[in-house]
Length: 399
Image 1 (spheres, one colour):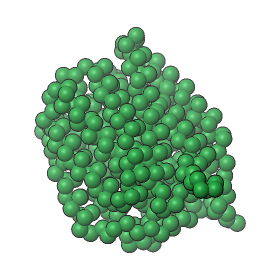
Image 2 (tube, helix red, strand yellow):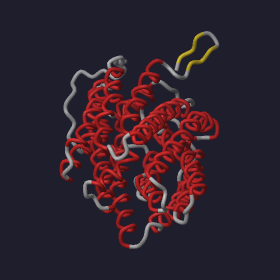
Image 3 (cartoon, helix red, strand yellow):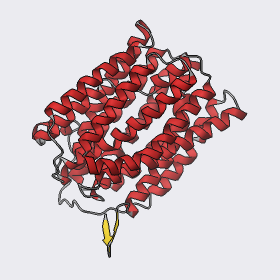
Image 4 (tube, one colour):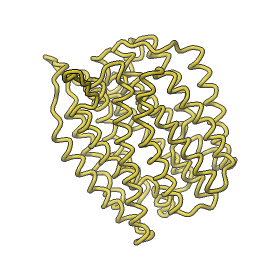
């Protein structure tokens, strides 16, 4: 953020470039995300195996987020991690079409998640450096809004393509490389601020980021404990799409619902970021969790298109009120030189929880019924809300 006269500019050139890169990458990823369950089923994956795949992919991303976030802080560099990370994710898209055996699908999906892991901590540190503690909600909210705009354009492109070429899933994986390549080109415009110079840049041990937990501020540990408890309940969005499909909605309608969800997210993320700076990041996040609980209980009994439409609107509001806000919150309660490590450590532990959450949701779906995972998550989230209200003090800012 900088001032020119009396004008305050929150969305800087760096924020714009990072947001455009995220938009392109998300367009590529989300072009494939809604059709992923149908594609995986078509090559022999069961619902349980899909849940495990998503969980493992996120766990790999998490460990790499922690490691590369720590490495970014140790080296005092951000841009190379962003460029390499987005490059790997772009390359993984056509691999999903080439490799159809389960082991190779795991490998391609994992490469995409490793790319995300490499870039996340460094990118979020760059965003944090562009803001003040009082404007983190705006900056992270704007970035999430642009990122999710890609999640509108991607599925919309997929829907249009499938209307003319139904069932041609393989071709979509090749087409998804195009926006990914644009993200790579845009990443070349990034310039290192060199705000964290170091004379020696030793390579951090792979699990060195876990040591941050013991040295981090007490407030960080309290906040992240609550966030991780929620992550244990928050399984992959794939289950939402599968639930809608299980209720009798066709593939086109399910993709349209997902586009609708992302469109609402785009509209809400930036305004909710502005509101969060006014009412407090903790308050906004807690409100988001309350909406999540309502949505998941609703999904357990939803059967019609109007019901799913309403629930996806609420789900988009929840996501806009929590996803960028959680990172802004963490960046405000950690030292500036540890921002990538703080976010990476949280992301690493969160992704372990995502593995457990998605695997457990798949187990409940497979062994009980398709409503149970949503009921369990909704009730558990209420407990997390109580914890945040009772044990996490109001927002403090150290950045």
